[in-house]
Image 1 (cartoon, rainbow, N blue to C red):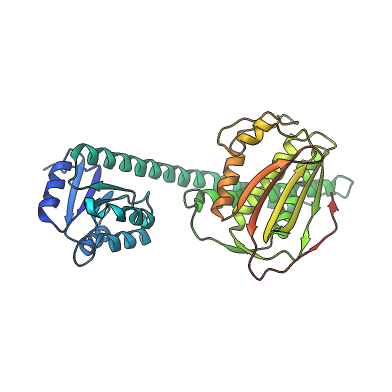
Image 2: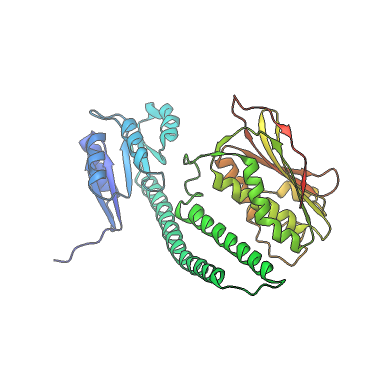
Length: 373
């Protein structure tokens, strides 16, 4: 006998046998396998025992109701990993807002209408499949990117073992190797941060470190120094001493600061100045990246942080511009609980900033003298 391969497994959870059977008959179509459960406890046991693609869950049931079952499902599975559609009677409509807060993907009002139910199930299954394809792509991309970076690390290590004759260029070669090594390490951090950990997919996950933003500023300065020097742009730091230590995802903050500094350098002409500044203002810790370049138009400011938008300014060194950097910065900062924005610089150019609420016990800081590079 040839076994049938089901493309989706649906779990219908309802204490009323007639409702269960009605829904299962209504939804039965090629490619669906339908499982039945009488209460939330049975549903959880089925979910633990085999893969389920979508759950249709009644609210009022004995033993364990749909609210508690939904809460436990969300402890293990995200909205994309296991979609849950709630059944609700008309008199329960006021509870819908509550189940959405708990992590329901959608709801169906009783009596369930076949066309509506089929359409909504199809939509959520399609979204879940696209999410899985994206996760698979990230997994493969991570694997394929790691190998050449490991090879690069080996090449750098081998090059450093070669004894160079003492001459004027030997120090410069070592500096280039150090820069190459640092760049390779940062790329490995990006692969781990964006692909392995999948930060954008799990934007609300609670990953945090004890972060001194001044240390991150200094790291970003070191990382971008060669780029600024190459374009004859001064990179200046102005840091506030004793900044409050924050609990943040340091990876997100590093990526945003690198992007903002890199953008400022990219769009400034030779001889310009880019300043990175930390301060405490209105109980917030604030980081600013300012420049005295050509700046932005009013229309540019209105479109900032929108995905795929091209602004009026152009790179001054023929660098590429994809239009995705600033939207990504906004997503990362807001996921970390902060705010981000931009304004014209009083001396010409633009100021990009992001800020986080300071801890209640944070110490006031003292302004440190600026550092020019």
